[in-house]
Length: 395
Image 1 (cartoon, helix red, strand yellow):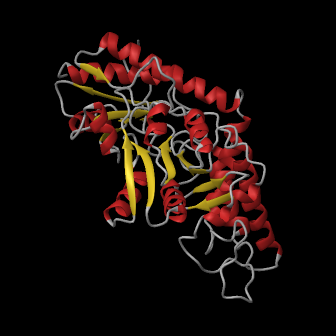
Image 2 (image 1 turned 135 degrees about the vertical axis):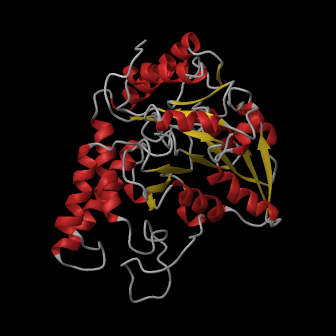
């Protein structure tokens, strides 16, 4: 373990919130659009508008390839994973429906579900995870009733980093005619995902985390065999298509993409998604790298840091997100010291997932969270462990 910081630079361990730094190709792509193209796709016929349309289509194809989707038009771009989840959840549910979700959900999913439950529009069952954050698929099966319309599951926990057995859960959903919605905000670009083999009907992703795109990007991916007309649009408006009609188009992607898209953001998203897919080892390599970093951090911290309590397991596959705390100091104070004294950026608190923290027994204070990215190294982890050792010892 390194005992001294060897370089005067920020160590960024907040990749679960948004990835940083972005690959140079991402910033180049955004700048190129802003300075060389700048037009609105589908609204005009000139060459700059057409070029902007090419950017959007290339981004769709790249995202489709990432998730094993055959038809890129089933990729719907939104401003983030939260909007995608709201579109999928509110778009498919009808009054009287029953929905199953889990105790590991981010507020992006649990809040829209809870709002519908409060309105007595739906009934909601929350399946409890174990202390490691894992959901037993059998509990999902037991919770299904004749009125169950959908199951909503967070693929990779933004609190613990643990990976849910979505393929097994998806099989259960498919066998019972239940729509399977998966929140892949933390797993997209980190964990290999195949929307068809994993039995997912609707997938929500964030563009600014594991895909290394800009903030303000994300999307909803609809499985090739899922009827998109089962999903109601959340908004209507201009699409650049069927402009002679006041009816909203019912074909994809226009049914769900009203208004001008974030083309600058999608330029960066395309570059980021290509970057990770073309890295040596691809997504599997990224997954392996993050698991190595997680195991190294937990091993070193348990060895050298007094009062270290870890809630993430080094024995489970992980998206590279770790929850921990120091017994003798609040998580807020520890995070502040890490930032101000050691230039180590992390997150503290409940991470917009109160049910997950109740599940693991860290509510209401929460935990410290390290979220590792593709550019993080074991050297940085050793520096962070030394910083935690110093904080724990009151130095």
